[in-house]
Image (cartoon, rainbow, N blue to C red; front, side):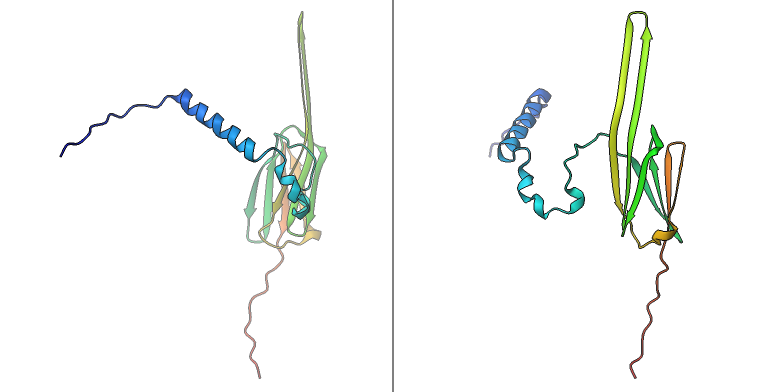
Length: 161
């Protein structure tokens, strides 16, 4: 019985990238941009927005402590006056606007960069909290929201008489 010997060859990365481009074109053919809008009526209200997506989304930590939930968000370049925190049921929303403008002139050299944009981040809290006792602090670009937990009731067996 004869066996055929084959050698392994390395693939051409340019050819592989061309395949990915062909795959993108194929998806664009079958699923054109905006194809989900037909089912938009059934979407949750928080998804129904015509705002463009922004590149900036704050990084967030959710820390589940014994008596509270602590939410920490990194918000560099955001001022306190441009920040809003809202609690609705078990959903916490952080909204804000970041504005930054730099100008530099040296002789014939002139550079101007403007960064401007809104953002929002909505988090589902892992447990019910006491909305009246929520506190927020904003210091050095870090937002901390302290959300005291509602005391859990213990399960008790009831005897039927």
